[in-house]
Picture 1 (cartoon, rainbow, N blue to C red):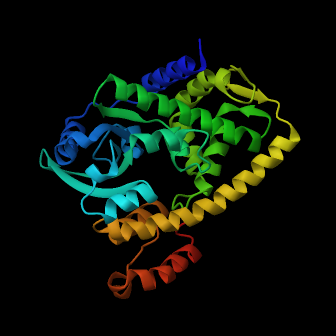
Picture 2: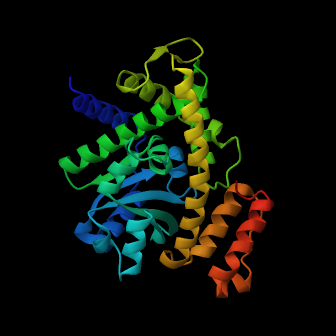
Length: 320
């Protein structure tokens, strides 16, 4: 089987392993977004805590809206420009369903940027780190688009494993491999979640991560042996010391780059996301447990005073 065929097979395997949520509220949400964005939408991806719980009312539904291009997905000229320069753009909507309110955060990303951002050509882990985790295809335009999305999800898993393996111990439990990898990926962003978040996510989806690692192992740049044991799959790999040193340096750079990109995305939300400040405060408070208030001067002059607010929240440990 050729490499591309092997990757397609891995994509199909990942799609089968991903959780599925057949909830009428989610269907109504997807239909509403498709109506808003029309033919520009090619796929809708579902991930995050509501996917894990199976209940779209359990918190905030996290979706990625995969689109043909940024001009057709955004009004005016500023939003598509930002979407192209620093993807994705993020938006928030509420939908009434069965006398309840469904809350959703969705990110707008082009299919070409999805493919680039999950490939090993993409240095930062923002997309390949995110999409190596369980992701369900909530809706897809056609079979060709589904193949492209599944291939991107497969590439995300390969990019993740190839980038984290040289930075982690040469052998151990597959569970700790993913925990360590997710910690590295999270450190490359400003995150409100605590240090135990990677462990919680891995344990909640351990069967998924173990199956993906077994399926991906033959396609990885680094030779990996997977051994089933009663306590869970174990991995073993041999990577030269120089390659490990380069990987550690790359992650140090990735982490520094990611902090700057995270700040840039927060600032971008002030211009592209209605209620962006309130959403940022809600998200930070939800994950850190620390109350976050937006001073009036920050609301009036965000570009001038938001920096002091970010620094204050960072000093308080609200995000890392």
